[in-house]
Amino acid sequence: MKVLMFGWEFPPLNSGGLGTACYGLTKALSSKGVKITFVLPKSQESIKVDFMKILIANNISNVDLKFIDSLLSPYISYEEYDKDLSKLKEELKDTFNTNPEHLIYGNNLFKEVIRYTKEAEKIAVQEDYDIIHCHDWMTFGAGIKAKRISRLSGKVKPLILHVHATEFDRTGGNPNQIIYEIEKFGMESADHIITVSNYTKNLISYKYGISKEKISVVYNGLEANEISLNETFNLKKHYKIVLYLGRITLQKGPDWFLKVAKKVSDKNDDIKFVIAGNGDMFPRIVEESAYLGIANSVFFTNFLRGIDIDRAYEMADLYVMPSVSEPFGITALEALNKKTPIIVSKQSGVAEVINNCYKIDFWDTWKIADSIIEILHNEDLHKRLSENGYEEVKKLTWDTAADSCLEVYNKFIINGGIHNG
Image (cartoon, rainbow, N blue to C red; front, side, top):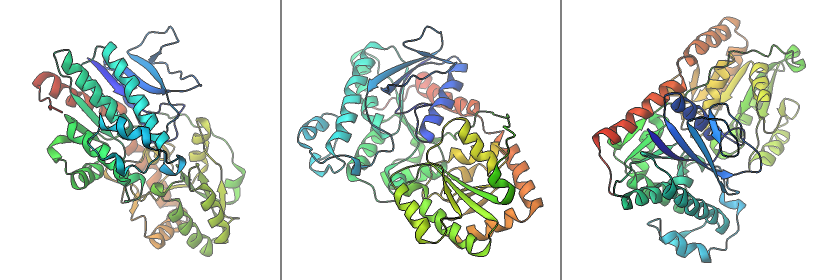
């Protein structure tokens, strides 16, 4: 089976869970004999993985990695782009059913999407594939083009959209209309949609009007990593550590994390908070910690990669994920894999697959604060959450996710069911 896959990031050049998910899934699919051509924006840095063929290298694998020049990030916000839209308006009409007059994200953002789509179209003409698999909205246009090209060859190839996050998640429920319309048109054009949780499946059905029968849930997995660094952390000698690790954006709830930190710090002087990550809200969160009078209790590390992420999890006594809207939440699995107990928001997909954790509404800061104190001051409870959570997370593998994807693939390759979009 050959898959033409479109994505926007891949480790180590990733700034969020999308890249981690793409890595885990493609590696598992590759191990099952699936040959993947993965189309990515080009980067100056090299990507090296042991299971995949990079075009400039000579190693053999089932995954062929292709690059397209782009400066775009899958987590981009419209504030980062200028407002000159004249050329864009005509170009978008060819791919998306939308009114270009409503564009507010900015010229450069959509130029990047259009450039990616056009270059991806060239690759689609050259490649032989059975399935088209697209990760999130920036690739939907490329997938639609690839499907149209396959029709010209005489056999329409099925288009599968893999939704890791929607515009409703990224904006805290206040979507940009053009992104919403691109997502909706892509979902309507797709033969099938994969979501990372029932949380996202239900959101798509309700907000985008897509039948639930057209949506399959494939939970993210975790790559086994039982290696412990066994390092000594000076901060941990004197304090209990609560960790936030993720992008500092509205979706992830860093402002709610600070409110929790304030409540805990007012009652306890033996608990410190670490915020690891960066994003558009970073300056505001730093200022807010000072304004709340907890600057001495909150430490910022900025964005972490590789072994530094492992260090953060091992240093932490508790991981808190206060996301406002979280389709899944791979970081929660990563924390449990290091035997660090977790508190996750009820507004998350990971809450569907982990039982040995605290699940609390992101806005219930008093309950989160009280739960932090309870877990950190009760050794038996902490140990139980740590050990049982660790056993649970070992069952969530990318191998299982790959099997679920293959079921979707085979449904369309063997049984047909191609949509006419």
